[in-house]
Image (tube, rainbow, N blue to C red; front, side, top):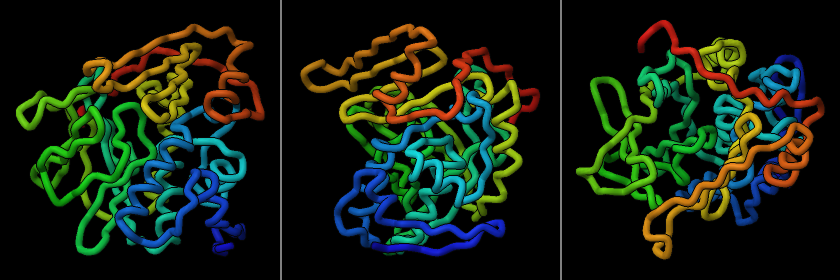
Length: 296
């Protein structure tokens, strides 16, 4: 058993790396290789939900590694980007990867506006002279395996395609929604970011913003989403949305079904579909997001 002892905010905690790997369903030897990086990235997405339920069940999110480890590994919860990617960066570093925390700004698909700096936490892993973008803390548009930062060419993942376009001092993650029409298809921006190294504490203010601002999806909507083999399951407020990704047999069409839940059904759905048991009742909030006053 591999154990790492750390101290954070006067609190000692053991990180049981084997337990973390078991939490995400990874059982192979964990050595710093591209194969392992891709595997643990995918396993994390298939096992740890992207969710903000703490905000809507009487709690607050605090960016301290011992608390994140307790929540995600021991309590088998998920989190939003600061939590999932923050803890994942710790795991990767303990496995021997060179990890850099980066600041991203997500583009709102409704308003067309970007969030403020430190709006999103993402990771860059440097391995054998190559740089890879990692993100296990994003929702539906998220990529499954790390993307290369060494090319602006399209990078296919299943029925989807992504690219990382470089601008002046800024990188832009783009996709073609649920389609792949090649390099000449219609590209939509997901978020922008720089390669300036950051630390977890840099995201503290935005972590609080996302728990209190009517311009944040995390404050306006109680949601939980997790990748599944061949699809995705998402809970937003009282809506349970099941998506099945396109295959050759379905001729490129994604199947989506939505079920309206009663309040008393939600705890069982969270346990059955997402493996989550909350300690306090959930308020299934689903309100409109107020456009932010500043354009970034």
